[in-house]
Length: 266
Ligand SMILES: NC(=O)c1ccc[n+]([C@@H]2O[C@H](COP(=O)([O-])OP(=O)(O)OC[C@H]3O[C@@H](n4cnc5c(N)ncnc54)[C@H](OP(=O)(O)O)[C@@H]3O)[C@@H](O)[C@H]2O)c1
Image 1 (cartoon, rainbow, N blue to C red):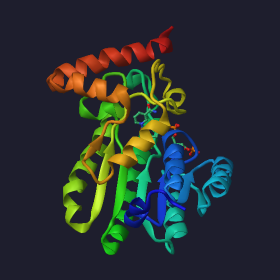
Image 2: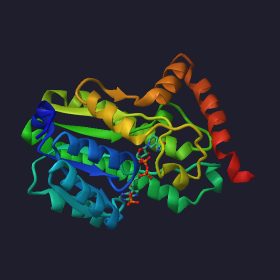
Image 3: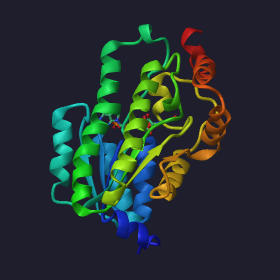
Image 4: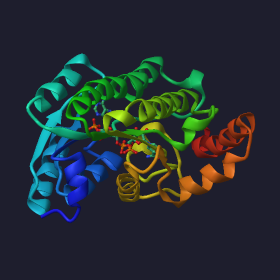
């Protein structure tokens, strides 16, 4: 029995969570199950999704569906749409994403273009498809994963930051555009979070927030405003940079990123 009936009424019965096999997406999936939501879990690693689904069914008595799909491919996106076509999805959480860090010219172009396809392309496609379904229902929610890096250029993570600026801008536009349609759009802008993200991006994070805090604070913020900065670290970084002009923020973030990528050249 859900202890969050109003959440379930507004955003249930089904939620879609991408990036559910790990990190922030996984925490979102569990936090939603705790609210009594049935959840469609999407990522590439089927075994991780299956074991999470089993755990959520047992511990929270919710229904779960697993879609093992690479969201950078047309087939992967089609598989998600097909698997959810009969379900009443009231909330979509687009958490699948990855980052790159280090000098732009030292990176691999194919990897950067794959990042663009996942962080921006898949997010746009899912926002469009699920936005249409939510608009037809006349209620629901969309949560997009932005980042603290979205608000200025970031040397040594220039392309990842650009992808998150895209997501942040998309969310801000849709928030107002869809307000009259009963759809709550939320941008989530965390600072460093303790997930698989750092090792995939070759980042040395140091202090980092728990993904459970990110998910909980985001779900509490859904329907209350435009952007959530979950955890102390993102609030501290966000508010201390807020008074700095954009060119200054870019330089400060460049210094932060230099520290986080120093080990790459050790
Ligand atoms: N961690 C941070 O410090 C931080 C800070 C700010 C924002 N964010 C954002 O938060 C989101 C989640 O990141 P995270 O920290 O949770 O990272 P994570 O632990 O590495 O999780 C990323 C998730 O995305 C999935 N994924 C990756 N490539 C995929 C693909 N091609 N198709 C489908 N799924 C794919 C991964 O699953 P599979 O490998 O099984 O596919 C995994 O479930 C990202 O958008 C990231 O940019 C993270």
